[in-house]
Image (cartoon, rainbow over all chains, first blue to last red; front, side, top):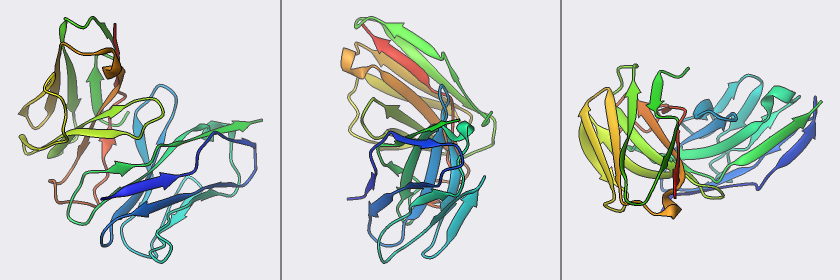
Length: 112
Length: 116
């Protein structure tokens, strides 16, 4: 079956530090890959996505590259801000199917 | 504001109560979803509706009963719940049908349910 594994949190960083949150997946074929973010008290919202191998998704300074050879979709940001504090979810949808399989989420805490 | 609203935002109910959660999407989307978010567990897909037809029921107990009267509204009817059903219940919608794997899902803010 499909599964997503992401690093345990919380990840604690100082403002302007470099961020990496690891995500690996198991799926048949070429799934679409997503990063969603959940701010306190809110639902999830799409941060970025990539729908085929070697694609790079980017948004708000965050980036992730679809690596088929390592089945990974790691999230990176060069300089985090306090406002980036949230829970980040990696997810996939299998080919021809819109339902999402999520990782457990990684909490990011950024201090001034 | 994602265009998906959920009411109520918070709900406390006893195990013998019957209540309903409501979701409304203002995006003209064709597919709607219910997810359960529990502490320390991945989001769990519960139900999927595509063009008002239920297309997936992910082994959810019968004490949860979904209803989709039209493409903009989705309900989750609750009865005789257990304390372990306490969680955040999230509704989502996406533009295409069930086969659109590249579609973005748009989530509501959720209903925080506590079962006493």
